Amino acid sequence: MSPSIFRPRNFITLLVTFSGLIMTVSGFVLYVVPEGRVAYWTDWRLLGLSKQAWGSIHTNLSFLFFLVLAFHLYYNWRVLMAYLKDRLRQQFTLRRELVAALALGLVVVGGSAAQWPPFLQVMELGAAAKKAWYAGEDVQPPFPHAELMPLAELARRIDLNLPGVLDVLAEEGYAAESSEVTLKDLAQRHGASPMQLFEMIMADDRVYR
Image (cartoon, rainbow, N blue to C red; front, side, top):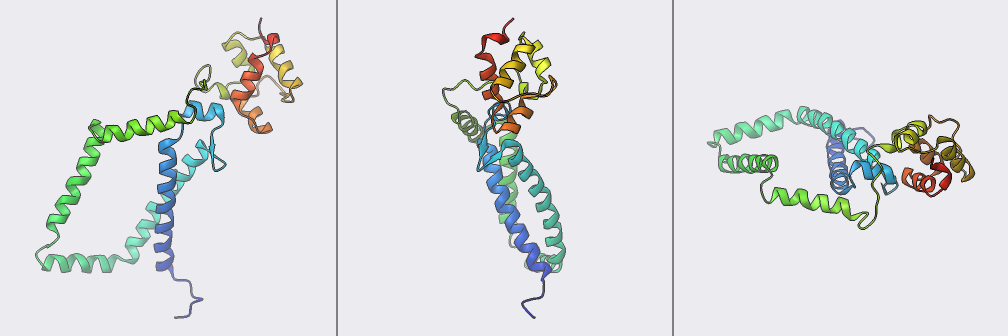
């Protein structure tokens, strides 16, 4: 067969491998990424990608993995069935291995759901890793998803002088075209984080009534 011919079976096998490897990486990143409210507030990034981007990569590759896996089974169905029939003719010599694999899988699922050791410790390690990114720093937003709230609502929520907020932003080079703009929009537009803009606002006396 000519090497220039596209081989769907080889393509599917390679795609399963590729998507599985990337899912492993993205899954580990999501395991240690800071909590959502902190990651979005500080505009946390790893390798230039935000928490939302890593989540999108992981989710879409998961769909791709399952789709490609279905094609993988399709292309190898006869081989798989022949293998199973051969094992059945040999009085199912893998029965011990099958029982052990099922038992281990059920233990992991059940232990994780019930928060038994050592599965509980695995999750606690992840929680510690999430906090380690900003150890000793105050990176909590004033309230959850403050970066998504329009400036007018943000000022009302924490009792700030809205004209003062807009003046401070404009003088610092972050002019908002309206009070309906969010901190997230302004931050992304100027390569900053919502937390940086908020701290800049709160450091100016003009924002207080």
